[in-house]
Length: 280
Ligand SMILES: CC(C)(COP(=O)(O)OP(=O)(O)OC[C@H]1O[C@@H](n2cnc3c(N)ncnc32)[C@H](O)[C@@H]1OP(=O)(O)O)[C@@H](O)C(=O)NCCC(=O)NCCS
Picture 1: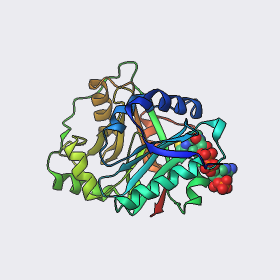
Picture 2 (picture 1 turned 60 degrees about the horizontal axis):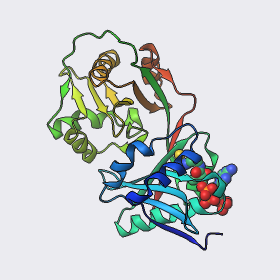
Picture 3 (picture 1 turned 120 degrees about the vertical axis):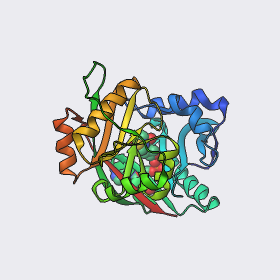
Picture 4 (picture 1 turned 135 degrees about the vertical axis):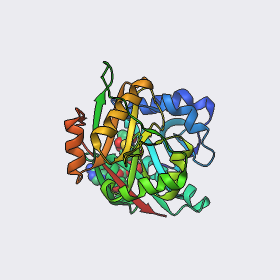
């Protein structure tokens, strides 16, 4: 079925077709139009299109991560062409790209109920690494906050000292825009370089910001210390940044985090998420 399938890097001329493929395959959750330029400018991560007999039928993005793994994301196949091996061909492209870049680990996420996406990953040897729930806090109306003393952390060693001990509580991940970053010293350096670590000098720390679409949502990637103090900072900073909402993904086993988010008024998203890991 896929003899006439060509997979190649997306070019500017493909913009409309790429947005259209996502629109058809993802009725409710879309973001490609907003991230197209960012995905195109990523020097080591191919943004790919699959064409069947010249027709655009699928897209996928390979993104290298701070610690050297790759995040495989935005895999979409036009429903009219699903079940014909196009998703598998895009996965094969992920592995080819990984090999050419000496990347040894691939990760992806999907919804807990997305059997096809999970089955496809399992087909390529991926195994479950962690399960997360999500929670959101609307910022459409103003929320009063208390004064706080959170400031960006600019020292990478200090950031690692603050964040690395939180690894067990967060299943080893920091999540922004549903991108699961492995919590490593390299990630701490990356977060500091992007101004995404905030601490108040009293042991409270939040990884905070957005990988993309900062106006839609600001993300609490992880936090440690006094939850109420961390959320007070996040609400204050989210309002300064004029975001529509705050989001936080947390491990399913993290009951204390779950209750703290609920106490602060966060609402859980209906379904959870899984992150899966594959070896190249
Ligand atoms: C997920 C998606 C990309 C798959 O694309 P596709 O072209 O239909 O996939 P393929 O035909 O190449 O591969 C299908 C494989 O998925 C797996 N699969 C399909 N249905 C499955 C099911 N019900 N249970 C478990 N695994 C299943 C199998 O491994 C199957 O291979 P097989 O036919 O050899 O058994 C496509 O369904 C899609 O675009 N979905 C909407 C977007 C999406 O969910 N993206 C994923 C991450 S958010």
